[in-house]
Image (tube, rainbow, N blue to C red; front, side, top):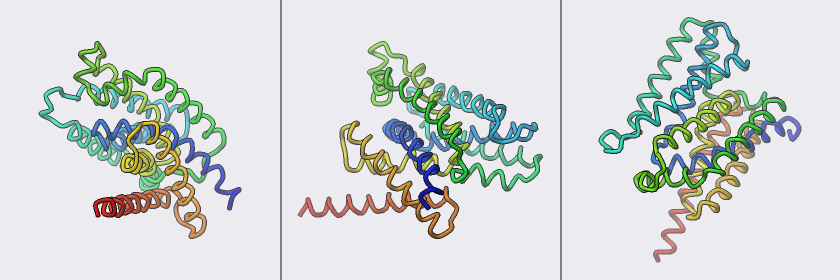
Amino acid sequence: MIELMFLPFVACVVLVGIHVYLGLHVIERGVIFVDIALAQIAALGYVVAFALGFPFHTPASYLFALGFSLTGALLLALTRFRSGLIPQEAVIGIIYVVAASASILVLNFAPSEAEHIKTMLVGNILFATWNEVVKIALLYAGVGLFHFLFRKQFLQVTRDPETARALGIRPRLWDFFFYASFGVVVTSSVEIGGIFLVFSLLIVPSVIALLFARRIATRLLLGWTIGVLVSAAGLAASYRYDLPTGAAIVCAFGGAAILAGLVKWISGRRSST
């Protein structure tokens, strides 16, 4: 088991590293479904490339998906309205459902469409190669370094865009940088992990960390620990019961979220008595 699952586990660790950090930003911005929307846009890019004759997991299909993701990032940056009249979650929902529907329409003209939709949803992390894992690790390290160097701007725009504007920081510009780097990550993540797993890695560890920690450094450490442990549990369940790997990991994260909620509720009741 250890030899068979070691590489998928390493892939999960790499995915956890960047997605937990981005997840903390996403939750604080209140744009919970931005990941699944951008992932779906990237998937649409892969589908369009496939329909034009470029197989999945090729440089051409990746460039198509990246181009679609960056276009989605620009759209998200431009639709953060200052008035708050239209919640950005509404825009994100529209983007997601249109991208998903467009993917189905495009695949209608391609062979074996059902199998490729399944691949986009649940991924193929069990069949990841060392070459793929090393490439995304280097890519994510670059994105992480970019966010570290400009962490003050990113955090200020995430937490208080109006104050950021008063300080001379341009929220829309930094929104674009955030969503563009997010799109670069998601384009690679969805290819190896699938939309469902990528969304779970982004949201669940961050939500659990927010339940039990206040400082961002503590939240990161807690989120990373949870992400790695739950991924390992999902992989073990997948091997033990011969289950689809991506779906098993996603369900493991669902179970972890329920367990964390119960622990928080029980500890809250005890502290109030």
